[in-house]
Image (cartoon, rainbow, N blue to C red; front, side):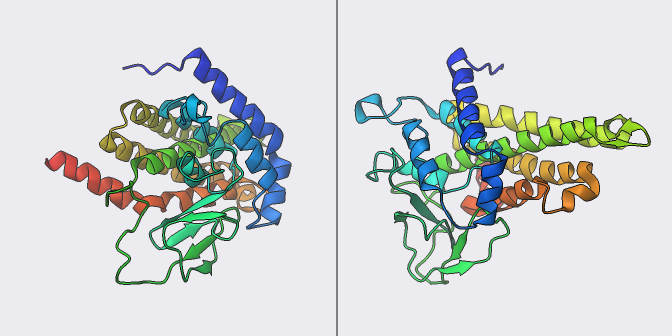
Length: 301
């Protein structure tokens, strides 16, 4: 099966990338890193005006009227740009929480024992009483931990009215991870072409070629899986896409760091920011364990 984006989908993807490049370029990214925990409300409202949160709402309800495949494309671009904030929670709350669709209301969600962006949030979905700050490995994702309690059984965001993991939250997270995989692939290849050693670009050396090739294979494999899951909406397809996207983002960022060598370990390089965000996202919704268990149950059925 071939997945070919329509002209409108390509235009949507390009438009979101242009918007994020303009409003959240590297200078803005570094400013956000220097002010951890602060959510840019103006940027949030710009996203709301652009239809980021209301993308899947019907036009009759003031939304854009698009579908899950388009949401995946938008979240892929958000992941590529390292856009901070509770994007998934606010997007999923559009239409049910007043102001979420327009970006006027910031919505956070309890995810097992953790809550991302608790303090800046206007609305928190789930019980977050007693949450305490937790030092996050990602300077752009503030975390709070909930106290252990016997009554707290859910370890992840759940679908309304069920105890099952929310597949939409998992798919949108996979799309963000895909965006990170795309960005670190681009970064690694650019560095391999321009950085020289022994009078030659380092991309001419076989070891670096292999790293870049592996980056490409994992990224494109994850892309096909994420796009397919957006079309089918099947929980098993989403679980498989999530596993592949998490691997593409985490291993991709690590390989990108390897391509950069000693430069990749410095604070000034952006590689570590992509790796840290990929680590944090990979823990959402129960992490790989939930996806693996879902796939195992499907295979055993």
